[in-house]
Image (cartoon, rainbow, N blue to C red; front, side):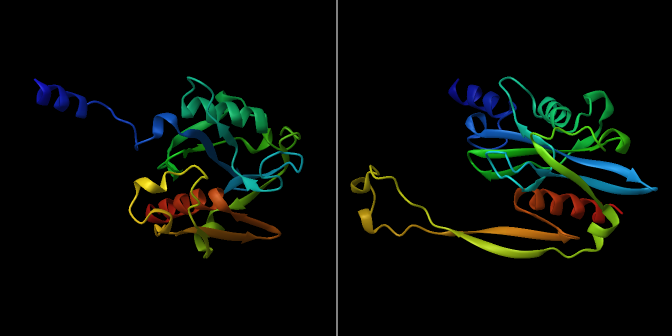
Amino acid sequence: MFIDQLKNGLQQIQPLFIGEETAFKAAVLVPLLQLDGEWHILFEVRSLTMRKQPGDISFPGGKLDNSETALEAVLRETHEELGISPESVEILGQLSPYIASPSFVVYPYVGVIDEQKVKHSFNQEEVDETFTVPVKWLCQYEPYLHFVSVQPTPSEDFPFEKIMNGEKYCWGSRAIEEWFYDYENYTIWGLTARILKHFVGLVKTNS
């Protein structure tokens, strides 16, 4: 009985990774648009008045609300930030999720938007400006890589007495990859660059 119930449970749809149910979830859109017959990707420069990451370059998107799907969130956030209605976004598909940590996951989508609708309609409280980068240029550009070392820091009440070597336990540090794209006077890096690099790789593989 136990094994049969277990097999049935294992065959059900499960979370993408352990901790997904309680992780901070966000969704972003990789927005494609045509300019003079050439495909571009649109980026946002976050407003300098934003509490988090002011001035950074990002894709439209944000946190999932309660009971909201990733797709619903990305369409809502695109509307709130760029003024583009969900009906005006043609979703082409979903990229692999970006799992920054077991407590933070981003679900990226790719969609086509109308260039005429984003010229002056963005929310200036959240977006300082928008700009585009040609997909062709991105496919020819070689992004450069830097590393950020992360060292675990246990909390003050960490139960060292329960682990081998106690306070002398050797915590392993890890290096985070940070990719950079320099386009004109803009630098795209961080989470946006990681998703961008994955998308460009997909385009190059299928072209």
